[in-house]
Amino acid sequence: GENVEQHPSTLSVQEGDSAVIKCTYSDSASNYFPWYKQELGKRPQLIIDIRSNVGEKKDQRIAVTLNKTAKHFSLHITETQPEDSAVYFCAASPGGYQKVTFGTGTKLQVIP
Amino acid sequence: GAVVSQHPSWVICKSGTSVKIECRSLDFQATTMFWYRQFPKQSLMLMATSNEGSKATYEQGVEKDKFLINHASLTLSTLTVTSAHPEDSSFYICSARDGGKPQHFGDGTRLSIL
Picture 1: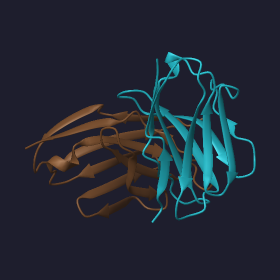
Picture 2 (picture 1 turned 135 degrees about the vertical axis):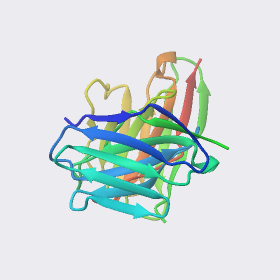
Picture 3 (picture 1 turned 120 degrees about the vertical axis):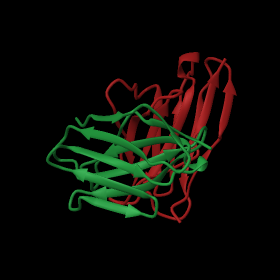
């Protein structure tokens, strides 16, 4: 089955700096890669996703890049704000009706 | 859009009790629902996948007789933790998906077994 690894497990950045979270996956059949943000005690919320037919996707301060050859994808958050502080999960799926496998999570702390 | 309602949000009960958790999709048809378990500071571990009208598919290591899942309609799935014990205490989260679209999560249920 799919195995998703995520690094770093914790990340502290100064407000205004950029944050980068990296993930690798093992199943070459995976073609859908969502990212979720989870605040303490709350539901994970989809913040951005990318499919394998594109290498990069951007939504305001958030961008995701995908390297299918190397089987890794990354989340980039620019101009970080204190409200970006949360746990971020990457995930991978073969798409369609298949299940999603989550990474181990990154706790991001943005220091004002 | 794509709202998933889960309740109760918090349950405290005695050991040996059975607990039912409901997951509802409010504004879309959930052809597939997923049940996850999350321990503190850890990732979401998939327990089972349920498709409307059919039996749930359980992940390896998850006892199907312990965690009963019913997905009787396109908007409702239930997870029943039977004869719960302290080791079953955890945060349980459901998610729902319409076909191949992205899944959306409920708010989770914090289960504490005394």
